[in-house]
Length: 92
Image (cartoon, rainbow, N blue to C red):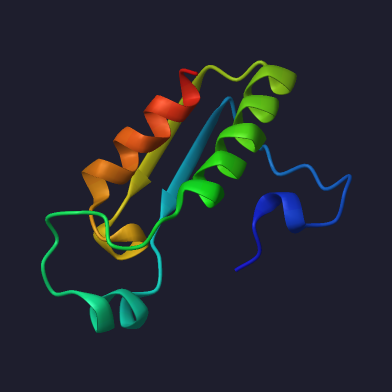
């Protein structure tokens, strides 16, 4: 699925006063690497940085009230660590 920043410019993706993002990843790819969900096994830092930049722009441009961001373990290998990485990048 294309990332929002890869879509046609001018397409308004915001239809409410909040944003919901869910990083799912590729189940087959991650399960070929691990069956244990206790650590990050795929470095998604560059992708997460792009999400942070995009979402900050959207939040501030649209003056949105809430951001909900979730990651399952198939995204990078450990959902809670991915969410924490996003939070740390957001707060920089």
